[in-house]
Length: 139
Image (tube, rainbow, N blue to C red):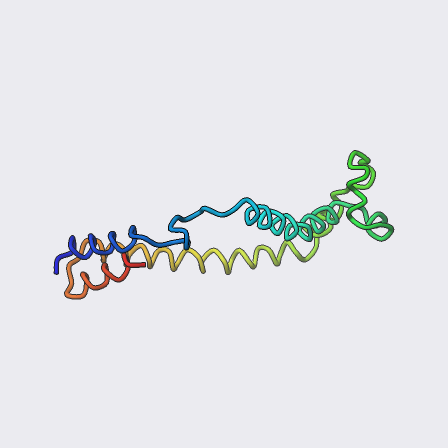
């Protein structure tokens, strides 16, 4: 079996009938979309609270909840950058550099290896190349 036949069969399987039970993909009812939107907004609330709290003064954090910022957002006396200044002049700066020293090679090396492997699969002929390309295009 040639490469083009395998590719054509995989394309027919991929573009055939499938997806949602109604036969089309992405056709959700407005109720489902509304529920998903509400769930997304609710899942963002803790993150918003953390970000707002990180910019508040320690007195404001200890005396009231982060949601009180909503009532007076233009009161600039409740905001500060001292929390970030203290964090970056402390131990977190060294920890951040260490994290970069571990993370960057952990990302770069596998990408380089994958690039070399992709080159080999694309331009070199081998007995198992047809099987490998068929299995990767079926996903």
